[in-house]
Every structure is written in structure tokens, then in C-alpha cells.
View (cartoon, rainbow, N blue to C red):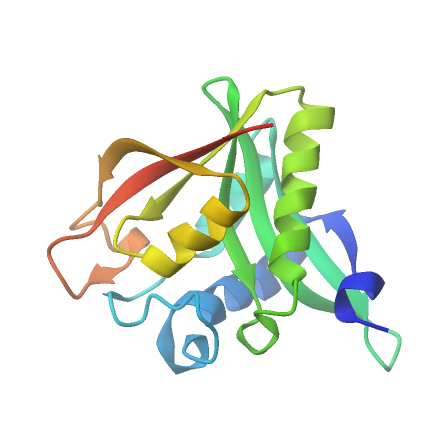
Length: 182
């Protein structure tokens, strides 16, 4: 059986916070992140998320962190991936997307993205999903474009000086808004 076929989704609770921080950090920062293709370790040091971010996402109205998991050999749940889904300005927002680095490329991310889109379309009745991506992340932007997202041309500044978003290793970082009609 494949990982994707045995995977289930649920909404994160406050008890999941430590595991979610560890997952997000492992997918984007440090040496562990270099096992996968989503790493930002060459662009940013410092944290990618923290307990404060996770707790705020869980507590916020029309916001949830979706967890993808499977049952491990010992019968316990095994965290595979997560994503933050929220309503912002009349559209769904997709962020904090993290798949365990050693499982990237196995279809888990596509399934998580599909689940997030389903929530926004069916549960929240929003017509559009948006996200922001660091605009020099060509491979990541291409991944989203293959799933129907388009570059809007709208750019947002990177929050230089706010270490809650990481410590930049370069001075040309900014976000681009991607969008998909649902």
C-alpha cells in the first residue's frame, strides 16, 4: 500500500503544536531540510515557525492547520505533512505547507494541497485560493503552476529585520502572490 492511500487528514489541536513546529522547521531550515526540495536553508537561517505561530493559526477564526498522517507499524499516528488554511480577504489562503523531507516527491504534498482546496471550496464556499511564495523559488512556483496556480504579478516585501520570519542570507527576497480559481 502506498503512503498516499493510507493517509488520513485531521485538524490540528494545541496538543500537536510541538510536533508541527518540528515538522515545519525540518522541511525548511537546517541540514535536515536539504533532504527534500522545499528547503530554504540557502536563503534563510533562523526559525521558520514557532509555537506562537502555530497557536495563533489554531486559535484564529476560519483558520485551521490540516494534518496528514498515517498509522505507523506500532499502531500510533505518524505525522507526514501539514498546511495552514485560512480565509483572508474573501479567498482561501494556503501556507505553512510542510512535508517530511524524506517523503517529499511521494505525492503527499499534492494530496494535502487538494484537501486544502476542498476545504476552501466546499466548506468555506470561497471561489479562490491564494498563497505567497518567495519569488526566487522557481522550482516551487513551477510545482504550484502545474496544479493550476498562476502568478499574479503582485509582490509583497520580505519582512527584513523581523526574525520571526527567519534571518535572510541575501537582500533580494520578496513574496509573490499565486492564485487559483476553485
